[in-house]
Image (tube, rainbow over all chains, first blue to last red; front, side, top):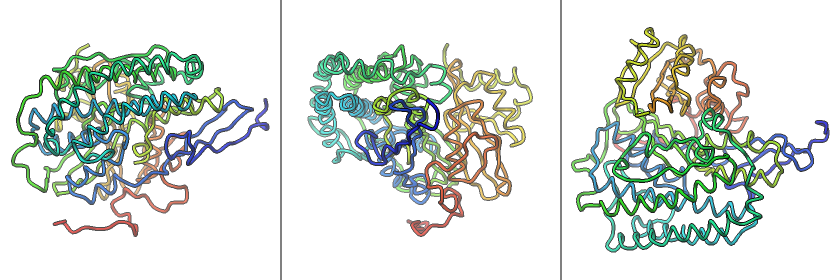
Length: 366
Length: 156
C-alpha cells in the first residue's frame, strides 16, 4: 500500500493500554503498524535537578518517585553511589535486609508486569492472581516502612529500621507459597492458547540489537543475552547466594514474560537463603553525620533492578548537596526499542510489545 | 570468562592502544579515561574495537566554563565497565554523536541536548525528548532560572 493511505493514530497520553503516561504516535497501514514513535516526558519532574538542591539524605525520597513499582531499587542504587562516594561501610545485616527487600521487590514488580500481560491479552483473571501475590509483598513492605509504594527504606549507610517482630516468619510464609502460585499463573496465562498466540513471535528482539541498544534485565535476557549484574558484577552479599539466571531463546514477548516468571521463583530461593544467613546486628553504619559532605569527585554504582541495570551517577563538589545526579534508567533504554519491535505488527500487538518492555514512566521521564 | 580487574584492564588497554595509556586513571574503584574532546571520537572507536560492546550511559555535567561528557562503557566479554570523560567549552558545546557506534546513544544524546543544550553532530534525529519542543532554556545547566526552583540556604 502506498504511503498516502497511512493513518496516524495518537495512542495516549493517558490510555489504559499505555502502561503509564506515555503517548505513542502510530502510523498505520490498515491495522499494521508501519512506524511507532513513543513520545515521553509527561511525567518529567526534573528529579535530577531537584536533587542538586537537597542534602544527600533528602534525595532518598526523590528516588522513590523514579520507579514507583520498584522504589527499593532506586533507593539502593542511589545509596550505593553515596556510600561509594563517602566511603561508608554498610553493616552485614543491612546488606542482607537490602537483598531480601529487593528480591521481594522484584516479585512485586514482575507481578505488575505479568499481570498486565494478562490484562493486555484479554486474560484479566491472571491480573488478579498476580496482584494477589503483589499485595502480599506490599503488605510486608508496609509493615517494614509504613508505606505501600514509596518506601524510603534503604538509606545511605544501611536501612531505615530493623525488621519488625514476626516479619521474618511472614516473609518465609510468603516465599514458601509463591513458587506454587507462579506455576498456577504459568498454566493460567502462558499455557493459555490465546495468550500464546498473542505473545509468541511478537516483538522479536535479536541479541545483537539488545546489546547495541543497551537493553538490560528481562528484556535482554528474554533474547538470550546472559547478563545479570547480580552475578556478572556482583555487589552486596550476592556472591554468597546461589541462584540461576533464567534466559529466553526467541526474544519475543512470550519469552520476556516467562523470564520474569522464573525470576520470581529464583528470587524466592534468594530470599530463603538470605533469611537463613541473616544474623543479628546493627542495620545502620555508626557515626554517620546527619549532613553528609563527601569529598569532591564522582562515583557510579549500579544494581540489577526488575527492569535491568539501574545506575546512579553522582558528582560531589564537597558540599552537603550532590553537584549532579544522573539516573541511568533501564526503562528509558528499553523503551527506545519500541519503534523497532512494534514495526510490522498490528496495533493491538503494539500494546503487548509495550507491556513486555515493562516501562515505568516515573523512571523513563525522571 | 572471569571478571577482569582494573589493573588487567589497564594492561590490556595499554598493550592495544599505547597512546591512550597515560590518560587512564582509577577513581573510586572505576577505570576512567580522560580524553581531549578532539580525540574523544577516536578513543571511543578504539574502545569499541577493544570489546566494549555496550554504551550503558551517557550524561553531562555542567562545570561552568566547560561541560564534561561522561560515557559509561561495558564489555560483556571482559566483564568490566569503565568511563570515558571529555570536556567541551560552554561557548562551543558540540561533540560528535556516537549513535553509529552504539544505537543506545540515540535517546540519551537527545536527553543531553534537551537538558544541557549540547549539540551532537551527525545525530540522526536531534530533538528535545523530555521537555516540550517550545521549552526555553536547558534546565540542567547551573545558570538555568525557573520560577519553580526554590533556592535553599547552605545550612538547609
